[in-house]
Image 1 (cartoon, each protein chain N blue to C red):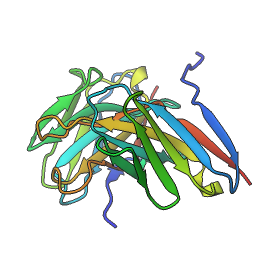
Image 2 (image 1 turned 90 degrees about the vertical axis):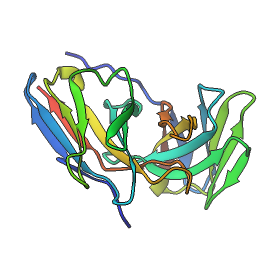
Image 3 (image 1 turned 180 degrees about the horizontal axis):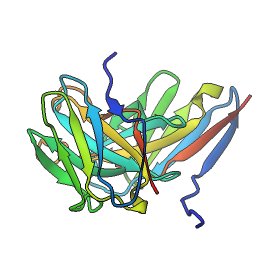
Image 4 (image 1 turned 45 degrees about the vertical axis):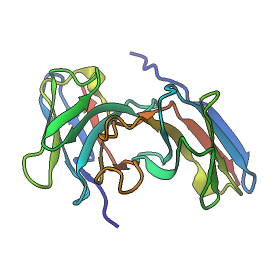
Length: 115
Length: 116
């Protein structure tokens, strides 16, 4: 039978350009957010995180922006490289009574970098 | 660098058969998780485990699923009677003690389950 699956949003960028990947999260009570990178056939790898008391955090070549008013998260990758090609997931978390709960993942965006 | 390891990397099974997926979390971590990812879709939470008991589970984690930490190192996911729709990549993840560092989960490379 035919398999049906979600088609991931795709972002195609030229090597060296900046990339911006967006994510809308679901729960206004979430107080911690993470971006993961998933290369084909591999597990998610941590990129950067941000707590809800911040609106911006920078790492090496990556910046995460958080807009709690509209429940929006973005990941900016500077000078995108072919090795950045992957699927990027945002995830949210609520700290429930110290147990930390679990991560809820968004749908993912596929980033393709053209050399 | 310590990592989460999972076995097998790929398992093919017949519908109705039992499957056990194994994970060795990072040694000083205390929280353990199973997630699954159907091909091309998002990563979905199945179950979390702390202090030798399930702390949270999703609707996906029905009576056909169980988890166990039989010794100090392994963390297993058992599916008692597999269905076609159980075909997915299953990821184990772990996290260290709460609040010492960020809340990120450390994921293994996954076990691909194919049910025929």
